[in-house]
Each structure stands twice: as C-alpha cells, then as structure tokens.
Image 1 (tube, one colour):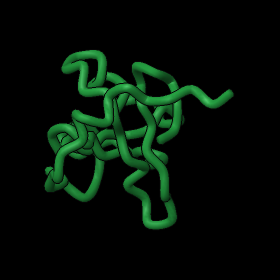
Image 2 (cartoon, one colour):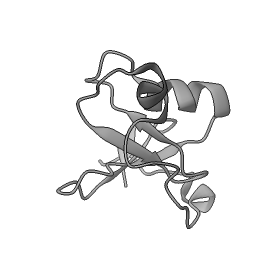
Image 3 (tube, one colour):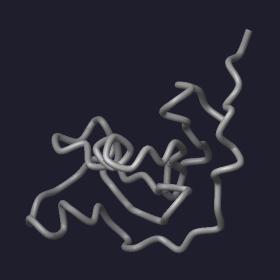
Length: 85
C-alpha cells in the first residue's frame, strides 16, 4: 500500500529564489541536481550532492515538500512522510 502525504496543505505557489543551489552558489561549489521547496521557494542541492542543502533546509525549517526542479523531473517528495506525491 502506498503511503500518503499528509502535508499537501503546506504546498504554496512559490517563486524559486535562484536557478541553482543557493548555498553552493554562495560558497562556489557544485551540485548534482537541485530541489525546490514548495513552502518557501528555497532552491537546494539533492541528497546525491555532497552538501545536501535541500535536506538541510528541511531539517532547519521543517518545510516538508520539495519538487525535483530539474527540467525532466516530474515529481514531489515529502520528507516527513517519506513518499512521493
């Protein structure tokens, strides 16, 4: 049975803060893929990237849902419920 996300009410219409990982850009680092926070518009690097800024953003803010934010990505993930939407 597929687990359901219970945080869909926290999805907002957001404007991305940047076109790349905000923190990696500031420190001059690179990333593998980027994720968009659907609560506030923060853009962070994925868990396959060495800095994992999207996950760190979730840990700091408790904003639960991210979007793949890659041109071919078509999914959202809830960190809290550990499921795709």
